[in-house]
Amino acid sequence: MKTRITSITFLIACLLTQQQTWAQSVTAKLTTAFQKFEADSQLQNGIASLYVVDAKTGQVVYDRNSKIGLAPASTMKLITSISAYELLGKAYRYETKFALRKNGKQTSLLILPSGDPTLGSWRWPETKENAVLKDLVKAMQRAGIKTVNEVVVSNEGWNEETVPDGWMWQDIANYYGAGAAKLNWRENQYDVILKSGKQIGEPVSIVKTMPSLNGYGLRSELTSAAAGTGDNAYIYFPVGTSTAAIRGTIPVNESSFKISGALPSGANQFVSMLADTLRTLGISIPQQAVLQHIGVPQQGYTFFHTVTSPPMDSIVYWFNRKSINLYGEALAKTIAYTDGGTSDTREGLNKIRQHWKSKGIAESELAMVDGSGLSPLNRVTTHAQVQLLLHARQQPWYPGLHASLPTFNSMKMKSGTIRGVKGFTGYHKAKDGQEYVFSFVVNNYNGSASSLVKKMYAVLNELK
Image (cartoon, rainbow, N blue to C red; front, side):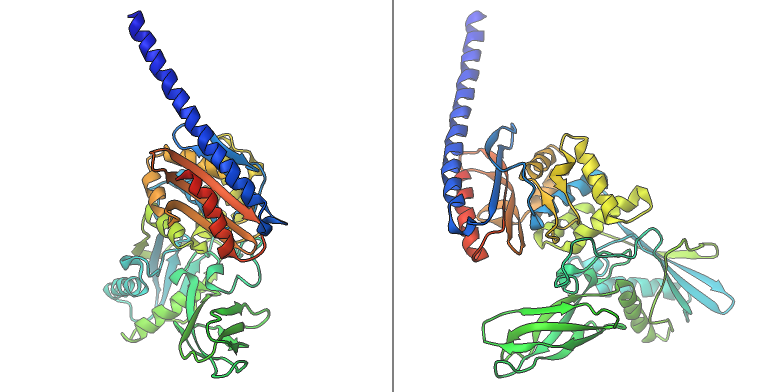
């Protein structure tokens, strides 16, 4: 018996020694690679943070600046994703309910939304605008409705500010800057088709929008630029007017150049498109909704239709695969709204911080101001990101989170990009079977993003 115990002890000691030797080897390689990276001219006035741990044991493999808060850009979407799984649950689905009330010859349509960011989205067959409108119209026909005199959208508990703190003026009228309302439609996005001139400097005209916009106009201040210069057009929300300006450039000789903008009101756009659909069937309905910010008395209303969103796994999948900022803002607001009666983003983020504080992560490591990472005011540590990813590996919903991660550089990781910021956060299994969790974030670099990314990949390649 003594001999057997001695043999087992010796075997365990050998395995531990082997693991320590492996860790030291990878650590040494990362140290050399990261020192070279930090000495690069692109980091002359910047700062970089890299934190790598063994995915199975949590043992630190490499740590540089992991407790310094940096702007994470879209790598922060992983924090929101994991927090949504934790606080809302894998089975969570949004519901948008519809009810009718007849009062003599007056008919009111009541819409009770819940902040669903997928309503009218083209990413699922059942959420596409035509599918949603078709099912709703059929339900209204079954109810025998011929005329609707009023459309009321309940906005109770949802603050009027759809855009969180810290978003830039240049962002908020463009598709990636769409804010989260209680009733979202088509991801609060529309497309603009542009036609440029034949010569550099010539004006650019607006051909059309898809869909046609309700109560919202556009004017072009764009000019034509050299061929191959790409999309440098930005939409700016109007102040004190209902017309937005498109500024910047698109290349010459373009007859159908598409850019995308953020709808100022998803609710009005939804009602307008519903009205257009019903009109073809001889059913009259107002083109705009009345938003009620106080409780709508539901006496006399009969609920006749409900639209249910895809489950959390599906929402998180597209949230991370396509880096949809709207989804992150909707989830942050939903976390606040679910049991608090308010959709204030700050309250949702505070709930996220408190949840992770209970699991040992300091609030100061999650200094967030939005749910998507679009704001340059966010400050998050790579240490906190890795700790959340480690936690996720132990949860039953982990396969959904892992599947949502894009593949870059043959590694499963979420990227993040805003001006002066680049990051990669995720998981990797090396050729030798070792598994890692890592977060690599750079702030205030200079030069091109593509050049920096190649250098970041060179560091991360030491994990392969």
